[in-house]
Amino acid sequence: MSEKSEVAVPITLTPEEQAVWDAKAKVRVLLNLWDLSGGKMKVKKGELTKRIVRTNETSQRYVEVLGELQATGAIEYSLVNRVTLVELTAKGKEVLAEGLKSKDSLFEFDGSQIGTRLGNSLLKWIRHQDGVASVGVEKGKGDVGAIASYEDFKSQALALFEKLDKGYNYMGLVPIWHLRRELGEQVSRENFKDLIMQMQADRLFYLQSGEARGATDEQKQDSISDDIRGLLFFASKPS
Image 1 (cartoon, rainbow, N blue to C red):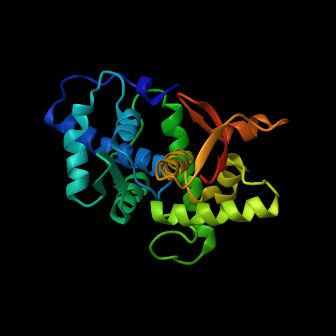
Image 2: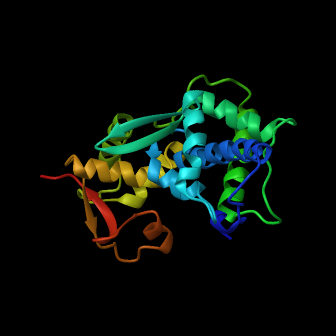
């Protein structure tokens, strides 16, 4: 069940109902943004919009909610290559935690069922909080090892390419799935694809189609799928 089919939202709300809807929507927006970004990276505004708009809703309904989140510093916008990106700030993470954990929070799931995606996002957040608590120390801004920018990703990916190429004798054709798995939780699946595609656009990598003989389904899933070129399995450096 998708979040879009979670509940039919009334077209007209009373002022009191609108206030409750806004409070719930802010938490849903922040939770979806946290999930999309892995809590670390910027994501395309369009991707966030697709995640939050539900049945009988339009993106226009969220303009005020997003504006309020921006005004309070919970989210930040930036423009990169004419694409609007949105980022969850440290303040936004605090607001999200308060909205999910506070006994005074108005947030709850509407209807008798919840969307699988939103439910899984909440489950992932809970597990992440448990993991943070088990560490027992405050790490400060950003988790240790988290990739916080394209420049950070670029430098790590290039170094990792050289390490894997030499260590596994890949002869200049390093499997994309191996790069992804080595980076692990440092970057989300969505951002990994966007960032490595950006490296190709910057002529740092060339992503090649095809697959190695005997490749497993998991290795194919951890590679990159392109609408035009199909499965991109290897990364190489342009000569």
